[in-house]
Image (cartoon, rainbow, N blue to C red; front, side):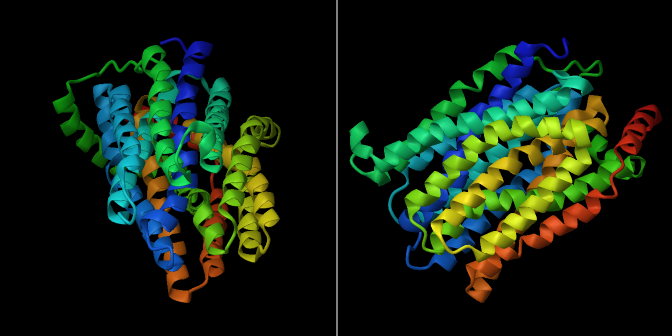
Length: 427
């Protein structure tokens, strides 16, 4: 395979442009808003917060439970693109199906949302794993950041259109805002499908000289997964980093998924919350590209630390905010650091894992990331329900950032590279 080819890197990165429409319009934007006022009981905000948190947690558990196993199969059978297509197809169909869900049908909305989120998150396992086949160590930071930055831009462009549809439905010949939101779910499905085409056409499946048939790959993939668990002691740095990532990325994902629900619970206007999300998207596009320059100057770990500290501060300020402009200010702050912490974390991880087993190890990476996303939304929802305070619910996330920062301090990247090399020699 040709490494560092611009066409392949951009084709790979454009999948982020494609599926980020789900992360913005559906996951962060319209689903929590619509769920709270249309599908669930609008008079019981604590209950709807709990159900939304539970839905995100269930989706995360499903992906996390199968991620390493599927990754091992994909490595053995050279099936990364096949799995990516399967999960993307699931996410696209289920997202489009949300437009059919009627008023008060919160159970069906939750079911479709969980399935769509499984498609989104499951696909990202194999999308992430393909990066080792298109970019060298010198270019992987650039490719990773490019993906996230295009995701912010692409997700933001479609979300902006969807917001205009929602605020001015008459401009599009749409009956009302509720209908506009339903149609927006269809636009996300179409956007995701169309812009996924480049990765399937121009990014090759990484070559595996030990490629085996799919059925045999299932059996050997399971054996390889068990073996990797047993030999994880040879990859101590990977284990520590994954644990650190488990905590801090949970805080990041929880804020993304629960921000609109939280703002609505504080009584902020829906249009103000939507505008804040747009601000995050368009700040995030250039900020993610700039963040890679910071990482080159001060190092990957320090760059992640800065982002963790910023998120901890955002969490505290979020618990104290009173006015809508506070929400805007925090939206800018999130945009400055969200793409950066995700991109640099992925780049750091590629440096400390065996390259020929990238899908399996990114299975672990996404497993812990998704298991972490079980804790945060459920923690926030449960604390909110028990105490009756949405502010205490958001403040509980602070623990995740503190734990992540402490564990990250114990990660030695150079030792991780040596461990990965020794691991390859060992097997």
